[in-house]
Image (tube, rainbow, N blue to C red):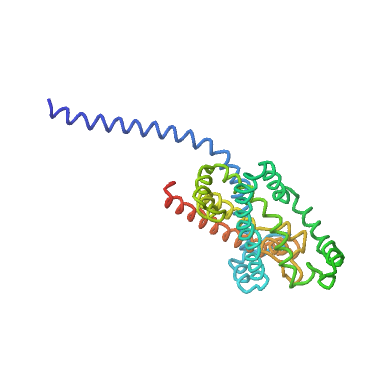
Length: 321
């Protein structure tokens, strides 16, 4: 009898396990149904156009008539195109202006607003300053570009201000000179981008236990030590998010370049997205413009994957995953 029980018990356990798997499978199938509308929308809005752009990148086409299949010729031409490499070199400058500097400044400003101004003055003061930093983000890109174009042109407000304070000799065509156009655009992009990390980091700091700061103050820790030992580790996930989203924004920046300089002068501010637009719509080289877009897309995907893997590795190290 005992031997019969030993035979029946594993069979019963296996049956229960199999039934549990079937129930979980049916439950998982229900979850997949919720993802179906998003998947269909992704295929229609992103997947389909991306595949078509990939096909066009293998053709020579002016936009009229039938495309002529030329294989990888467009990509081979890109390797020897000086304007293409110049545009990617300018992208590095955009990453500095839209990712590195705003993230570092945003960290310091958010910590100062939360840890110093918000605690020593009324919280509304910190909220008002946060809104002021974020204001450029809600302005339409073209409007901001036109306003800064007026400020930076030879008879604009900046040169007028320099004249008023006796520094008229420093007056300059800031956007018309190849030597100053890119730094001027970078300054504008820092102004535009700074509010985003400030808002994200301040929201992240809201979930930090204030007793940590109070304990650190009692132990005699100054502002920088609290910033380094408490603020930075606590908001690390948000730092990855800001870094990833700002890097993608910097690599595909188009509106400010279009409004301020249109890639000039002498390609000093040209970036891949504007170069693709100009090649596609102005030079009517649809296949070549598509090749530029595909390379840019591939680089953005690789950068996003690297960011996500780095974030997952950091979270595993911290024991979050």
